[in-house]
Length: 126
Image 1 (cartoon, rainbow, N blue to C red):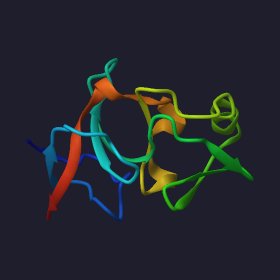
Image 2 (image 1 turned 90 degrees about the vertical axis):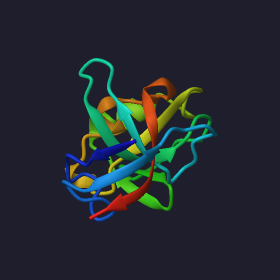
Image 3 (image 1 turned 120 degrees about the vertical axis):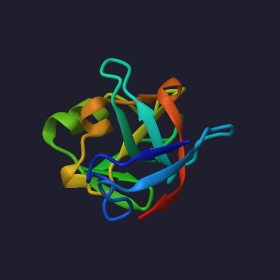
Image 4 (image 1 turned 90 degrees about the horizontal axis):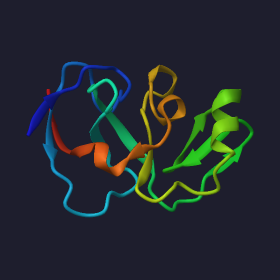
């Protein structure tokens, strides 16, 4: 399956307008995978990086989420929401855009359910 990236939230990894090859997930999603998923209430497709998988511990320090080799800035409401959880619930993922200051992701949308995931990006074309 192929799709066109419709946002700049994954820059510099992926760019707006870029074509990506998507592989349906047949195994466990891992931290670092770039996932394509569909929000059920809007049917919108989004492309984000899996920063924490189900069961992973949520670590917050000084208004930053620590995950997948990076620190991600959190607003006060985002931090308060995440502090309600010790771990990512089973069957869910925490996904974030690489362009963290220009991304609508789990910090705003909440956890992404496994059933919403279409696949993972395996190749990008210019």
